[in-house]
Length: 616
Image (cartoon, rainbow, N blue to C red):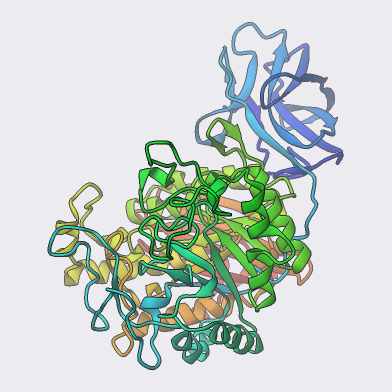
């Protein structure tokens, strides 16, 4: 028997689901079985450093179904809070908090509290961001038009060959290129539109030595192997006419050691911070008397920028700085690389600069954890309080989907969903960048069905690929994962090639060339059909309610009151047939099959159901 009932992701128990606006009055309802019969119930709320604690005596409301209702109304200032309940007159387990599988539980001591985020919204989240599909491109590996000429000592490779994971001398130089360029992307815009792509996210395009371009040499120049500024302007213009926006990768935490800013090897003459104490860039970096310097994760090739340096801040975020400059050239926003490494003194200026230049510009942060309570270098970040990020890369959801689809662990997905729905503001939750893989992860097909080589040397990864059985199984599982990615809150971001079942282990094997002419056409057709679903507002802006998380089955409902559309999505990774009960008649948008009152899900079965009529 449940002695206590509470679920903050249900409006019945918490009138505002998710993070709450500053000063907004909201209610909390705890249900306690009448057999417990506490003399008093108190809601205890304390702030993040436990310096302020408030107690709200909850008033008792009319009971029903054997449970008494205890309610409290409150409003709070911006910040991160935690809360739990205390029952007086109860001898043993007198505390109520978050228990196993997110169920409300009674504790004798050491109660696990619930999180409560309170935001003060300053910037409006762009209304275009979640309407379709985002597509991530590593420029060198997506498409090539014309001849790309190698610069310096870089190596041109044949399109489709496996990227080098090291050279013959064992050194990793990341200097092998395949010729992809901006004009290649322009040539494929119609293809992207066929996937209902509405946003292109480009990995770094500025001048740099490496093929990945995260070692920027000059933020003011497009890398000559990718094209010119005119090519970029043309890309943004032609994409815009097709309803596609372009966002750039902002690598503002570090530069390349060979850059004009640092210039360790004197590639740019005698200047640069490393060589010249009077360089305008000298104070961007922390350089010690012995010649060593602060760098990102101890990579000597990536000296770290001092975020508190005013000259660096001006370079990136002043009126004519890098951030607004490329927005004026046609970009619609920035994805901020390793945003948790960028201190607020820099991040706040970057965001303000972008929003001033283009109010509907989007700022997306690379955060691998729950962004609502992230701690970095001992500092609690405030990404989602309404003054910084519009969205983050949704790595927690990626991990939850993979655990469920690959391993049948529906509770792992349910836990991630609970945390996101409870902790994030709705305006962030419905704009989360939902990924299944990126340039930093194993290809999703390999992750779902391949031999697990997490700690294996790259030599093993280089020679391992899916056999026929694994490939077929991977395609089945990828469809299931994509169904969840496209229909959960947020918007899907497809890493180029995933839509045609490209495989590969982690960097550099996930960074292969797009296989033009050798695509898995069946998978491509499936992704195009999913792309059409993103035209339904119920999947972009609809409410979310989890329905089932048991026996290898996960199901949820999306409801859009504006368009009066209801949808149910369900997946069965369990071994047994599962009977899913429906509150009316539904049609599967993928197959056209109609279901009344219930549907039976087979093993590996999935449905995307749109409601036709309600039960009478």
